[in-house]
Image (cartoon, rainbow, N blue to C red; front, top):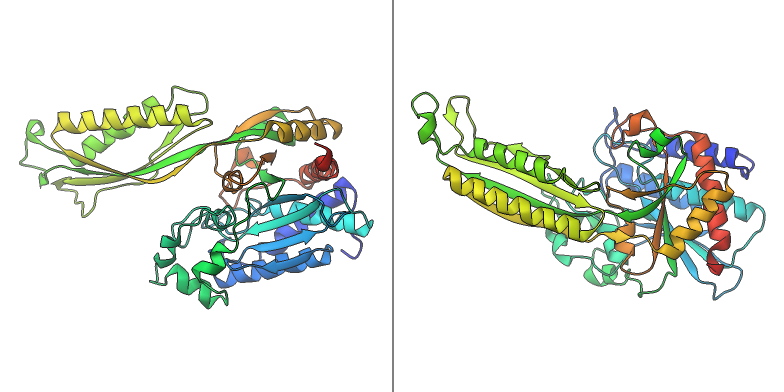
Length: 418
Protein backbone atom coordinates (compact mmCIF):
# COMPACT_ATOMS: atom_id res chain seq x y z
CA UNK A 1 0.00 0.00 0.00
CA UNK A 2 1.27 3.49 -0.83
CA UNK A 3 -0.80 5.20 1.87
CA UNK A 4 -0.48 4.08 5.48
CA UNK A 5 -3.88 2.76 6.57
CA UNK A 6 -5.46 4.46 9.57
CA UNK A 7 -9.09 3.30 9.82
CA UNK A 8 -9.87 0.02 11.59
CA UNK A 9 -11.04 -1.51 8.31
CA UNK A 10 -7.89 -0.58 6.41
CA UNK A 11 -5.67 -1.57 9.34
CA UNK A 12 -7.31 -5.00 9.35
CA UNK A 13 -6.74 -5.38 5.64
CA UNK A 14 -3.09 -4.36 6.02
CA UNK A 15 -2.55 -6.90 8.82
CA UNK A 16 -3.90 -9.73 6.68
CA UNK A 17 -1.86 -8.50 3.71
CA UNK A 18 1.34 -8.74 5.75
CA UNK A 19 0.34 -12.17 7.06
CA UNK A 20 -0.07 -13.42 3.49
CA UNK A 21 3.30 -11.98 2.50
CA UNK A 22 5.04 -13.51 5.52
CA UNK A 23 3.47 -16.91 4.77
CA UNK A 24 5.38 -17.07 1.49
CA UNK A 25 8.46 -18.05 3.48
CA UNK A 26 8.24 -21.73 4.35
CA UNK A 27 10.49 -24.73 4.81
CA UNK A 28 8.13 -26.76 2.65
CA UNK A 29 6.38 -25.78 -0.61
CA UNK A 30 2.98 -27.28 0.19
CA UNK A 31 2.37 -25.87 3.67
CA UNK A 32 3.54 -23.26 6.18
CA UNK A 33 6.42 -24.61 8.22
CA UNK A 34 8.97 -22.19 9.66
CA UNK A 35 11.56 -23.77 11.95
CA UNK A 36 13.98 -21.79 14.05
CA UNK A 37 16.84 -20.19 12.07
CA UNK A 38 16.14 -22.03 8.83
CA UNK A 39 16.19 -20.10 5.55
CA UNK A 40 12.46 -19.34 5.74
CA UNK A 41 12.82 -18.16 9.33
CA UNK A 42 15.65 -15.79 8.48
CA UNK A 43 13.71 -14.40 5.50
CA UNK A 44 10.67 -13.81 7.71
CA UNK A 45 12.85 -11.98 10.22
CA UNK A 46 14.16 -9.69 7.50
CA UNK A 47 10.63 -8.87 6.37
CA UNK A 48 9.52 -8.07 9.90
CA UNK A 49 12.53 -5.81 10.51
CA UNK A 50 11.86 -4.04 7.21
CA UNK A 51 8.20 -3.43 8.04
CA UNK A 52 9.18 -2.10 11.46
CA UNK A 53 11.55 0.41 9.90
CA UNK A 54 8.91 1.45 7.35
CA UNK A 55 6.58 2.04 10.30
CA UNK A 56 9.02 4.55 11.78
CA UNK A 57 10.71 2.26 14.26
CA UNK A 58 14.30 1.46 15.03
CA UNK A 59 14.70 -2.27 14.46
CA UNK A 60 17.32 -4.94 14.97
CA UNK A 61 17.72 -8.72 15.00
CA UNK A 62 19.23 -9.70 18.32
CA UNK A 63 21.60 -12.49 19.41
CA UNK A 64 18.89 -15.19 19.30
CA UNK A 65 17.17 -13.99 16.13
CA UNK A 66 14.39 -12.03 17.84
CA UNK A 67 13.24 -9.08 15.76
CA UNK A 68 12.99 -6.05 18.04
CA UNK A 69 11.48 -2.72 17.03
CA UNK A 70 11.16 0.41 19.14
CA UNK A 71 8.89 3.41 18.62
CA UNK A 72 10.06 6.19 20.93
CA UNK A 73 7.63 7.92 23.25
CA UNK A 74 6.94 11.64 23.49
CA UNK A 75 9.54 11.97 26.27
CA UNK A 76 13.00 10.39 26.35
CA UNK A 77 12.24 8.74 29.70
CA UNK A 78 8.79 7.48 28.73
CA UNK A 79 7.89 4.07 30.19
CA UNK A 80 8.22 1.16 27.76
CA UNK A 81 5.22 -0.95 26.84
CA UNK A 82 6.34 -4.23 25.32
CA UNK A 83 4.21 -6.20 22.90
CA UNK A 84 4.76 -9.02 20.43
CA UNK A 85 4.53 -12.76 19.88
CA UNK A 86 6.39 -15.47 17.94
CA UNK A 87 6.89 -15.92 14.20
CA UNK A 88 8.10 -19.53 14.06
CA UNK A 89 5.40 -22.14 13.37
CA UNK A 90 4.45 -25.72 13.99
CA UNK A 91 4.74 -28.09 11.06
CA UNK A 92 2.09 -27.22 8.47
CA UNK A 93 0.68 -24.49 10.67
CA UNK A 94 -1.52 -21.43 10.27
CA UNK A 95 -0.80 -17.88 9.11
CA UNK A 96 -1.94 -16.01 12.21
CA UNK A 97 -0.81 -18.03 15.22
CA UNK A 98 1.82 -15.85 16.90
CA UNK A 99 2.31 -13.64 13.89
CA UNK A 100 -0.84 -11.61 14.48
CA UNK A 101 0.72 -10.31 17.70
CA UNK A 102 3.64 -8.86 15.74
CA UNK A 103 1.91 -7.63 12.60
CA UNK A 104 -0.98 -5.86 14.33
CA UNK A 105 1.28 -3.64 16.47
CA UNK A 106 3.44 -2.84 13.43
CA UNK A 107 0.33 -1.69 11.54
CA UNK A 108 -0.81 0.43 14.49
CA UNK A 109 2.62 2.02 14.94
CA UNK A 110 2.72 2.78 11.21
CA UNK A 111 -0.59 4.64 11.61
CA UNK A 112 0.78 6.60 14.58
CA UNK A 113 3.94 7.45 12.67
CA UNK A 114 1.94 8.60 9.63
CA UNK A 115 0.15 11.11 11.87
CA UNK A 116 3.35 12.16 13.61
CA UNK A 117 1.86 11.00 16.90
CA UNK A 118 4.07 10.07 19.85
CA UNK A 119 2.63 8.57 23.01
CA UNK A 120 3.20 8.78 26.74
CA UNK A 121 4.92 5.40 26.47
CA UNK A 122 7.49 3.99 24.11
CA UNK A 123 6.32 0.87 22.25
CA UNK A 124 8.67 -2.06 21.87
CA UNK A 125 7.56 -4.84 19.53
CA UNK A 126 9.34 -8.18 19.83
CA UNK A 127 8.97 -10.81 17.16
CA UNK A 128 10.03 -13.78 19.27
CA UNK A 129 12.15 -16.09 17.13
CA UNK A 130 11.19 -19.40 18.74
CA UNK A 131 8.21 -20.51 20.79
CA UNK A 132 6.88 -23.68 19.20
CA UNK A 133 9.94 -25.90 19.68
CA UNK A 134 9.72 -27.53 16.26
CA UNK A 135 13.43 -27.85 15.50
CA UNK A 136 15.15 -28.35 18.86
CA UNK A 137 12.26 -29.54 21.06
CA UNK A 138 12.45 -26.35 23.11
CA UNK A 139 9.69 -24.04 24.28
CA UNK A 140 9.78 -20.27 24.88
CA UNK A 141 13.43 -20.23 23.82
CA UNK A 142 13.48 -16.55 22.85
CA UNK A 143 11.20 -15.06 25.47
CA UNK A 144 12.97 -17.02 28.22
CA UNK A 145 16.21 -15.23 27.30
CA UNK A 146 14.56 -11.81 27.58
CA UNK A 147 13.05 -12.90 30.91
CA UNK A 148 16.49 -13.96 32.16
CA UNK A 149 15.45 -17.61 32.37
CA UNK A 150 17.34 -19.12 29.42
CA UNK A 151 18.66 -22.65 30.01
CA UNK A 152 22.19 -22.64 28.62
CA UNK A 153 22.13 -26.44 28.57
CA UNK A 154 19.89 -26.43 25.50
CA UNK A 155 22.70 -24.92 23.41
CA UNK A 156 24.11 -28.42 23.06
CA UNK A 157 20.78 -29.95 22.03
CA UNK A 158 20.75 -31.20 18.42
CA UNK A 159 18.11 -31.22 15.71
CA UNK A 160 17.15 -34.14 13.46
CA UNK A 161 20.26 -33.54 11.35
CA UNK A 162 22.61 -33.57 14.34
CA UNK A 163 23.18 -29.80 14.27
CA UNK A 164 23.46 -28.29 17.73
CA UNK A 165 21.49 -25.23 18.71
CA UNK A 166 24.75 -23.39 19.35
CA UNK A 167 26.01 -24.17 15.84
CA UNK A 168 22.66 -23.24 14.26
CA UNK A 169 22.79 -19.84 15.94
CA UNK A 170 26.34 -19.26 14.68
CA UNK A 171 25.47 -20.48 11.17
CA UNK A 172 22.78 -17.80 11.07
CA UNK A 173 25.46 -15.18 11.65
CA UNK A 174 24.59 -14.65 15.32
CA UNK A 175 27.13 -14.84 18.20
CA UNK A 176 25.93 -18.05 19.82
CA UNK A 177 27.79 -17.27 23.05
CA UNK A 178 26.40 -17.52 26.54
CA UNK A 179 27.40 -13.90 27.22
CA UNK A 180 25.47 -12.61 24.19
CA UNK A 181 22.36 -14.50 25.29
CA UNK A 182 22.66 -13.38 28.90
CA UNK A 183 22.86 -9.79 27.67
CA UNK A 184 19.31 -10.06 26.28
CA UNK A 185 17.82 -10.31 29.78
CA UNK A 186 15.84 -7.28 30.95
CA UNK A 187 15.69 -5.97 34.48
CA UNK A 188 12.53 -6.76 36.40
CA UNK A 189 10.05 -3.89 36.01
CA UNK A 190 11.52 -2.89 32.66
CA UNK A 191 9.39 -2.89 30.53
CA UNK A 192 6.54 -1.29 32.47
CA UNK A 193 3.99 -3.70 31.00
CA UNK A 194 3.32 -6.22 28.23
CA UNK A 195 0.32 -6.86 25.99
CA UNK A 196 0.09 -9.78 23.57
CA UNK A 197 -2.52 -10.00 20.83
CA UNK A 198 -3.20 -13.56 19.72
CA UNK A 199 -5.71 -15.49 17.66
CA UNK A 200 -7.84 -17.44 20.14
CA UNK A 201 -7.00 -20.90 18.76
CA UNK A 202 -10.38 -22.10 19.92
CA UNK A 203 -14.14 -21.68 19.27
CA UNK A 204 -15.32 -19.71 22.33
CA UNK A 205 -15.40 -16.22 20.78
CA UNK A 206 -16.75 -17.65 17.53
CA UNK A 207 -19.66 -19.33 19.33
CA UNK A 208 -20.44 -16.13 21.23
CA UNK A 209 -20.32 -13.96 18.12
CA UNK A 210 -17.55 -11.74 19.51
CA UNK A 211 -14.54 -10.45 17.56
CA UNK A 212 -12.27 -10.09 20.61
CA UNK A 213 -12.00 -11.17 24.24
CA UNK A 214 -9.93 -10.33 27.31
CA UNK A 215 -7.73 -13.13 28.66
CA UNK A 216 -7.85 -13.72 32.43
CA UNK A 217 -5.03 -16.22 32.84
CA UNK A 218 -2.68 -18.32 30.72
CA UNK A 219 -2.76 -21.96 31.71
CA UNK A 220 0.42 -23.43 33.08
CA UNK A 221 1.35 -26.93 32.01
CA UNK A 222 3.11 -30.00 33.31
CA UNK A 223 4.52 -32.33 30.68
CA UNK A 224 5.76 -35.83 31.46
CA UNK A 225 6.99 -38.90 29.64
CA UNK A 226 5.95 -42.35 30.79
CA UNK A 227 7.51 -45.74 30.10
CA UNK A 228 5.49 -48.83 30.99
CA UNK A 229 7.54 -52.05 31.03
CA UNK A 230 5.91 -55.47 31.08
CA UNK A 231 6.91 -58.81 29.60
CA UNK A 232 6.83 -59.51 25.88
CA UNK A 233 5.33 -62.85 24.93
CA UNK A 234 3.80 -64.85 22.11
CA UNK A 235 0.34 -63.55 21.25
CA UNK A 236 -1.01 -67.03 20.65
CA UNK A 237 0.46 -68.97 23.55
CA UNK A 238 0.42 -66.52 26.47
CA UNK A 239 -2.88 -66.88 28.40
CA UNK A 240 -4.75 -63.62 29.01
CA UNK A 241 -4.62 -64.16 32.77
CA UNK A 242 -0.83 -64.51 32.76
CA UNK A 243 0.06 -61.49 30.64
CA UNK A 244 1.99 -58.42 31.74
CA UNK A 245 0.84 -56.35 28.77
CA UNK A 246 2.48 -52.91 28.79
CA UNK A 247 0.12 -51.47 26.15
CA UNK A 248 -3.01 -52.64 27.97
CA UNK A 249 -1.71 -51.08 31.18
CA UNK A 250 -0.92 -47.84 29.34
CA UNK A 251 -4.41 -47.81 27.84
CA UNK A 252 -5.94 -47.99 31.29
CA UNK A 253 -3.65 -45.15 32.40
CA UNK A 254 -4.76 -43.01 29.45
CA UNK A 255 -8.39 -43.48 30.48
CA UNK A 256 -7.44 -42.51 34.04
CA UNK A 257 -6.01 -39.25 32.67
CA UNK A 258 -9.20 -38.58 30.74
CA UNK A 259 -11.40 -39.36 33.74
CA UNK A 260 -9.50 -37.20 36.26
CA UNK A 261 -8.99 -34.25 33.92
CA UNK A 262 -12.71 -34.04 33.16
CA UNK A 263 -13.47 -32.95 36.73
CA UNK A 264 -12.80 -29.18 36.57
CA UNK A 265 -13.86 -26.53 34.00
CA UNK A 266 -10.40 -25.30 32.94
CA UNK A 267 -8.54 -28.58 33.51
CA UNK A 268 -7.37 -30.61 30.51
CA UNK A 269 -5.18 -33.67 30.19
CA UNK A 270 -3.77 -35.01 26.94
CA UNK A 271 -1.83 -38.10 25.91
CA UNK A 272 -0.63 -36.93 22.52
CA UNK A 273 1.97 -39.62 21.84
CA UNK A 274 1.59 -43.35 22.44
CA UNK A 275 3.91 -46.00 21.04
CA UNK A 276 4.98 -49.65 21.37
CA UNK A 277 8.71 -49.70 20.50
CA UNK A 278 9.60 -52.64 18.23
CA UNK A 279 6.00 -53.81 18.44
CA UNK A 280 4.64 -56.66 16.36
CA UNK A 281 1.12 -57.87 15.61
CA UNK A 282 1.81 -61.30 17.11
CA UNK A 283 3.67 -60.22 20.26
CA UNK A 284 2.24 -59.15 23.62
CA UNK A 285 3.71 -55.64 24.11
CA UNK A 286 6.60 -55.63 26.54
CA UNK A 287 6.93 -51.86 26.55
CA UNK A 288 4.73 -48.85 25.88
CA UNK A 289 5.75 -45.18 25.95
CA UNK A 290 3.37 -42.25 26.20
CA UNK A 291 3.37 -38.51 26.82
CA UNK A 292 1.27 -36.59 29.30
CA UNK A 293 0.29 -32.90 29.19
CA UNK A 294 -1.87 -31.49 31.99
CA UNK A 295 -3.02 -27.86 32.03
CA UNK A 296 -5.38 -25.66 34.05
CA UNK A 297 -6.04 -21.98 34.61
CA UNK A 298 -4.47 -22.17 38.09
CA UNK A 299 -1.52 -24.12 39.43
CA UNK A 300 -3.36 -25.67 42.37
CA UNK A 301 -6.01 -27.31 40.17
CA UNK A 302 -3.40 -28.59 37.74
CA UNK A 303 -1.00 -29.89 40.37
CA UNK A 304 -3.76 -31.71 42.25
CA UNK A 305 -4.78 -33.43 39.03
CA UNK A 306 -1.19 -34.41 38.23
CA UNK A 307 -0.74 -35.91 41.69
CA UNK A 308 -3.97 -37.91 41.34
CA UNK A 309 -3.06 -39.13 37.85
CA UNK A 310 0.41 -40.24 38.96
CA UNK A 311 -1.06 -42.04 41.98
CA UNK A 312 -3.67 -43.83 39.86
CA UNK A 313 -1.17 -44.81 37.16
CA UNK A 314 1.19 -46.30 39.74
CA UNK A 315 -1.71 -48.26 41.22
CA UNK A 316 -2.59 -49.58 37.77
CA UNK A 317 1.01 -50.62 37.18
CA UNK A 318 1.20 -52.47 40.50
CA UNK A 319 -2.11 -54.28 39.92
CA UNK A 320 -1.07 -55.38 36.43
CA UNK A 321 2.45 -56.45 37.40
CA UNK A 322 4.24 -53.91 35.19
CA UNK A 323 6.66 -51.11 36.06
CA UNK A 324 6.08 -47.42 35.42
CA UNK A 325 8.82 -44.84 35.00
CA UNK A 326 7.73 -41.19 34.89
CA UNK A 327 9.86 -38.13 34.09
CA UNK A 328 8.78 -34.50 34.17
CA UNK A 329 10.04 -32.74 31.05
CA UNK A 330 8.47 -29.31 31.57
CA UNK A 331 6.65 -27.45 34.31
CA UNK A 332 5.49 -23.91 33.59
CA UNK A 333 3.45 -21.98 36.16
CA UNK A 334 0.19 -20.31 35.25
CA UNK A 335 0.41 -16.63 34.35
CA UNK A 336 -2.55 -14.60 35.61
CA UNK A 337 -3.11 -11.42 33.66
CA UNK A 338 -2.64 -8.25 35.73
CA UNK A 339 -6.03 -6.88 36.86
CA UNK A 340 -5.06 -3.26 36.15
CA UNK A 341 -4.13 -4.06 32.55
CA UNK A 342 -7.04 -6.44 32.00
CA UNK A 343 -9.42 -3.76 33.29
CA UNK A 344 -7.91 -1.18 30.95
CA UNK A 345 -8.17 -3.62 28.06
CA UNK A 346 -11.80 -4.34 28.91
CA UNK A 347 -12.60 -0.62 28.87
CA UNK A 348 -10.95 -0.32 25.44
CA UNK A 349 -13.01 -3.25 24.15
CA UNK A 350 -16.19 -1.58 25.37
CA UNK A 351 -15.26 1.72 23.71
CA UNK A 352 -14.82 -0.19 20.45
CA UNK A 353 -18.51 -1.16 20.68
CA UNK A 354 -17.88 -4.80 21.64
CA UNK A 355 -19.45 -6.48 24.67
CA UNK A 356 -16.50 -7.27 26.97
CA UNK A 357 -15.98 -10.97 27.60
CA UNK A 358 -13.24 -12.58 29.68
CA UNK A 359 -11.87 -16.06 29.09
CA UNK A 360 -8.81 -18.11 30.06
CA UNK A 361 -6.14 -19.27 27.63
CA UNK A 362 -5.53 -23.00 27.55
CA UNK A 363 -2.56 -22.55 25.22
CA UNK A 364 0.85 -21.33 26.33
CA UNK A 365 2.19 -17.98 25.12
CA UNK A 366 5.35 -15.88 25.33
CA UNK A 367 3.49 -13.69 27.83
CA UNK A 368 4.05 -16.47 30.38
CA UNK A 369 7.79 -15.79 30.31
CA UNK A 370 7.48 -12.00 30.20
CA UNK A 371 5.25 -12.22 33.30
CA UNK A 372 8.49 -12.87 35.21
CA UNK A 373 9.50 -9.31 34.36
CA UNK A 374 6.34 -7.25 34.43
CA UNK A 375 2.54 -7.18 34.43
CA UNK A 376 1.02 -8.79 31.34
CA UNK A 377 -2.33 -8.91 29.59
CA UNK A 378 -3.66 -10.56 26.44
CA UNK A 379 -6.27 -9.79 23.81
CA UNK A 380 -7.76 -12.77 21.98
CA UNK A 381 -9.09 -12.35 18.44
CA UNK A 382 -11.80 -14.58 17.02
CA UNK A 383 -10.64 -17.68 15.16
CA UNK A 384 -12.76 -18.87 12.23
CA UNK A 385 -13.38 -22.38 10.90
CA UNK A 386 -14.71 -23.68 14.19
CA UNK A 387 -11.67 -22.43 16.09
CA UNK A 388 -9.14 -24.57 14.19
CA UNK A 389 -5.53 -23.51 14.76
CA UNK A 390 -2.03 -24.99 14.26
CA UNK A 391 -3.49 -25.97 10.91
CA UNK A 392 -3.60 -24.51 7.36
CA UNK A 393 -7.36 -24.05 7.87
CA UNK A 394 -6.71 -21.45 10.60
CA UNK A 395 -8.39 -18.22 9.54
CA UNK A 396 -9.56 -14.81 10.69
CA UNK A 397 -11.24 -11.83 9.04
CA UNK A 398 -9.89 -8.39 8.23
CA UNK A 399 -12.86 -6.94 10.12
CA UNK A 400 -11.89 -8.74 13.32
CA UNK A 401 -8.24 -7.75 12.88
CA UNK A 402 -9.44 -4.16 12.47
CA UNK A 403 -11.44 -4.26 15.70
CA UNK A 404 -8.42 -5.69 17.52
CA UNK A 405 -6.23 -2.93 16.06
CA UNK A 406 -8.71 -0.29 17.25
CA UNK A 407 -8.66 -1.77 20.77
CA UNK A 408 -4.87 -2.00 20.76
CA UNK A 409 -4.48 1.62 19.62
CA UNK A 410 -6.81 2.81 22.38
CA UNK A 411 -4.87 0.71 24.90
CA UNK A 412 -1.42 2.08 24.02
CA UNK A 413 -2.72 5.67 24.08
CA UNK A 414 -4.07 5.19 27.60
CA UNK A 415 -1.36 2.93 29.00
CA UNK A 416 0.75 5.57 30.71
CA UNK A 417 -2.23 6.73 32.80
CA UNK A 418 -3.38 3.24 33.85
